[in-house]
Length: 309
Image (cartoon, rainbow, N blue to C red; front, top):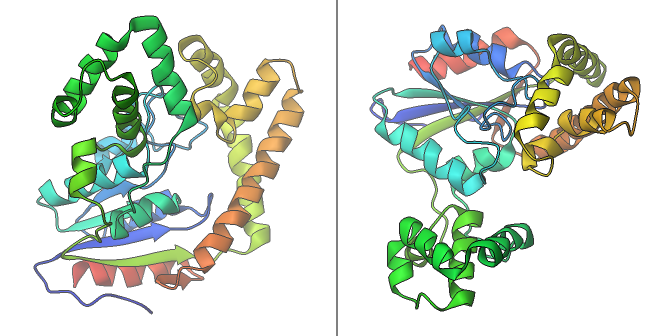
């Protein structure tokens, strides 16, 4: 077993990860009953409001009983990335009086960002740039510069309001990294989470059992009203937003566009979820820090002992 030795005064993270459908959320709730803690989601879909059934989002009633962070924090129209996750999750840990946190989810880039930090990537993002250029064409440079002044006043001061290329580039950097140009200059190396102890735990689940759980979850999502949820979301949001490209939403949209049958859509969701789980397993097995368990009770006992020590 791999743990980090820490002093009693340090905050602790129990990072509960694993493949999709490996019962991470229910395990986190069981662990919460044993360890005084708060739950921080590490799931790239759960951050978005309104996309509920297809993301297997914990119910509102559950979230009222147990404090969850980073669920329903942004509009589906907003950009959200690992940089934003790193800043928000670290701020939660820093400000909370709670000493223990259960970080639960399968988005490994988010977990890596929280624990290790990220190398700053300011490479060009064509999708974001095109969106900004469209704003320039429709609303003008004055509008873009006013936006830049709000999100990066120091950066805006450093360039001319008539410098179209730099105004667009500075906005692009902010949207893609979640940081202002000023912050980029100050932080040019990634920083590990400081003075925080953590363990990583995950369940080792047989492929056949996992595939069965995936089939059951997809069937439950359909029964719970995934098709109706997406019909409602289509009336609110454009079809080209990021959440609509995720597994489940993409296939049902194809059905609603009359490209495939509902039966085909359901089967595609199951197939793609299993393919996704396989990729997750490959990634997770490369992480030497993860403590693997064959039994849920053993995982709970090990994690609770760490959280209460």
